[in-house]
Image (cartoon, rainbow, N blue to C red):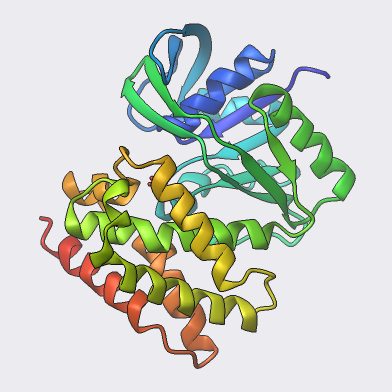
Length: 308
Ligand code: KPL
């Protein structure tokens, strides 16, 4: 496999996790950062047991600097790993120069692609991952949980090219599965986030606490609304599949705090608009009622409105 020039936009935990493994696989990584100036950094990846520390070097590019704009000419592939609401502003300065370059959007929730003003021929892939990662400092990322990644075409590219990109990712951090219908995988992950994220943020608890009886009516209500919606959208996912995957994720990530619990705790904007908010908007367009999702959505909006 030839080595590629890969641009990663978003230097949070998932961005640095991929930067690390793609560098290890022999690719040249350029990671755009809003907070750091352009430099080559030494990066350490700690495995979940804390025993194995792997070191790599990759290039940080300062957001919107001249050297960053110059570097775009040689980029073969872009991976966007920002929060869903940051995708539009993060891509906007670069999108014109990247119009022939495949861009992978890897984020929690759904609907960020609809916010972009894309040329119809712009190659875009959508991906979802269940890897757990935590940024410890500017040079260290903790890989908290081994997961899997699913990827598929959103627009503007052939299946052949999409499978080549899948192979690049698979070679760096397996397993990565190419999906002919990525929407099914995205809806399944969306349902997990709808059931877990807002509830853990509102109750300020770890994912595992959602196994308690008091939360079951809300989780079942959220998933039942989503399964009615997926049925109307012809997405092949039924209520039981969603319920089983939520139960599994609650058990597998029992000691973790969800990303939304962390966002609300540290008074940061959450991804609620792209999680329960996305479900509420999609359902409204089809005249479906989603009171459970709406209640969680509004509760998070109230918490966010209290941040200064
Ligand atoms: O994706 C997650 C998140 O926290 O955003 C889950 C799956 C809920 C794991 O915490």
